[in-house]
Structures are given as C-alpha cells and as structure tokens.
Image 1 (cartoon, protein in one colour):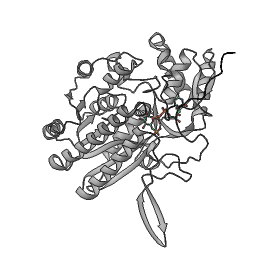
Image 2 (cartoon, helix red, strand yellow):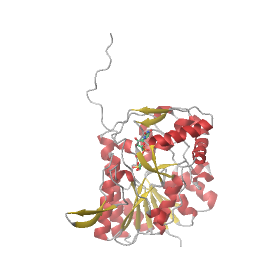
Image 3 (cartoon, rainbow, N blue to C red):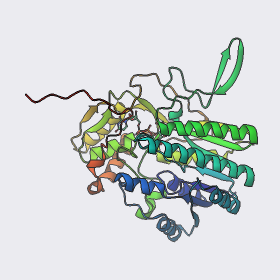
Image 4 (tube, helix red, strand yellow):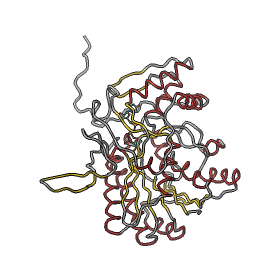
Length: 396
Ligand code: USQ
C-alpha cells in the first residue's frame, strides 16, 4: 500500500536518494530542506564532486523522467510553525529525519559551529517530536542517529540497550554513550529526547545508529546527471572511504589520521536506502523506541586506505598511504565489536565492499577529476586547539 513519506533533509547526500527510492516504489513523497548544507559549502569554500542541480530542478527532472511527483517544502526545522504546517498538511505515515548538521569536523571548528550544530539538531528534532505528538500522533519517526554515539567502549556494543546486573538486580537500560565530537553529542541528546517521547507520549520511534556511509550513487540517482547526489570529499564534509577514493583519483597521498587502527562500522549508500526502507515498512509500535545499528561491515581506517591503494594500483595509479598526526582526539588502538543483526533480521541484503565496487567508485570519480579541489582535502580542523605551541627551530 502506498505510504505518505516525509523526508527531512531531502536535499542531502542521503536524503535525496532516499526520497527518490520511496517515490520510485510508488509512495507519496514530500521533501523538506532549508538548504543549510549549500550555505555551509559556501562558508567553507567547498563543493560536492558532481555538479548538483537545485532541488527544484532535481524534482522537475524526476517528474520528467518518471512521471512521479515529489512535493517540495523549503523550511527550517528550527521554525516550529513551519514544521507544524507541513505535518498538518501532509499527515505522513512516516517521517525520515536526516535534517541535521552531519559533520563532526564542522562541529569542532569553533564555539559558533558547535552551538549551531547542537541547537540546529536538537531543537529541530524536538520540534519534529512535538509536531508529531500534537498533530499526527500515529506517524512513525525514523531518525538518523550515529554509531558514534557509543564511542569505542572496551565491551561489545549492543543495539541501543544493555542488560546490567548491579548489586543483585537486573535491568535493561540505554547503552552508555561516549560521543567523540560535538556533532556526535547532538545525536546523543536527540536519542534521549526520542526515547522520552516514546516512553512518555507513546510515539512510534526508530533511531538508526548509522555507521560511516560511502558510495557515489544509487539506482535512482544514476538515472540522470540531474539526479546526482551531493558527494563530498573535503576534510569537513567528506567521509573516510569517499575521501580516499577522491585522493586516489588525483594520486594524492591517502590521509590516514594517526596509525589508522580506528575501527568503525561502514555501509554502502545503497544500504542506507535499504535500511530506511525496512524501518519504514516494519514500523515501531506506539510507545516503542527501537534502536538499530545501521552498518554492514567493520573496517579499520588503515584497512580501507590499503583497499583503495590496491584498487588504484590495478588501474596503474601511483598512490601512497600517508600517516599524519591525528587532528581528532580518538582511541587509535581499541576493541570494537558492534552488534548489527536487527536490520538483517528484517531482511537487509548488504552490498559488501568489493574491489569491483571500489573500481566503480574510482571510475566515476576519475571522470570528474577536473572538479577536484586539492586545497580542500586538508582544512586543519583540530579537536584540541594548539595552545602555546612549542617554539619551532630557531634560526642560527
Ligand atoms: N579519518 C582518517 N582520515 C580522513 C578522514 C577520516 O583517518 O581523511 C578517520 C577519522 O579519524 C575517524 C574515521 O576515519 O577515525 C571516520 O571518520 P569520518 O570522517 O569518515 O566519519 P565521522 O567523522 O565519524 O562521521 C561520519 C559522518 C557522520 C556519521 C558518522 C558515523 O560524517 O554523519 O554520523 O560518520 S560514525 O563514524 O559511525 O559515528
């Protein structure tokens, strides 16, 4: 049965492909965006690798190609009246919430970007929760969280909850959070608010703790250049594997921070779309706060860099791996074993990272090589500012 699906952040790297995938399946789709990402790009002097049409042009191109309509709302989630008006007008069965500032480095630039990130993300999500409670209480909220909420504890990471026995009594409680950036913390705050909204108000909520996403396209975005998704490779908005592939395409050394033993969960952008689809089609019950760990494979950063280096070598490109001082404050040698079975139980068919897949990414990226701006690969955001630096070598 066709559902009414509202995608918040529908102009973004993941929001746009998600909107297209639901529309392609015949669901009624509306997207909301305030174009903040396009402003941050201007602010930092970066741009996505592939040329990105305006959202209006993208929606028009989709209509021309498929005859399908996507409803477009330009609105800011920190404007409560706007959120209410969209919720009342569209009455979604599901809201898929990507409408947040998604970059850890952006949130660590300075106090202005840190407070902006937490205000934008936390207040926006609170507005969505109140608007659902008061205007569309049956709506299922599917919210994008992050695996980074858990940090890297020295025990297995469970999916959202941990059963603890303390002084002879046992309870199942939210899994402890150890976020590694102001951005990741904003998602922790969101998770607490989501849990509250389902416990106290009985809302249906799924929190998708997503790993690091890679990939250049989905079936729908590949149909036409006007449908391309906003793929970043710069230090602030690019994620590890995407950055390494772009670096390889211009034979720039692969920028591994520190030893590169940092291990994370990763997934293909096609699997993001699939996971969200599974969450929407198997909704949470009223009062249920579900947490799914949304990734398909674990890799260390160094393993990823080596995989890209090897694939590039097969293409005859000469690429090296360069370890630089880690600008982030994170454990480089740590235990990491995160459970991720709930989406598989719902039917997720992962697209694992293969050499063929890296080859395809490298090919698409190389075709746009002349758009790569090497100056944005390293922008110098540090988790801990250098204070009173040691005096450098003195001239004789
Ligand atoms: N890293 C490098 N070199 C680089 C870029 C990153 O060594 O050039 C390392 C980082 O130190 C880190 C790891 O790669 O250990 C991942 O960094 P990332 O920039 O790919 O991803 P991250 O900052 O963690 O954030 C990304 C998304 C965010 C999402 C998160 C999922 O931007 O929206 O929530 O991945 S997770 O990492 O599981 O928290």
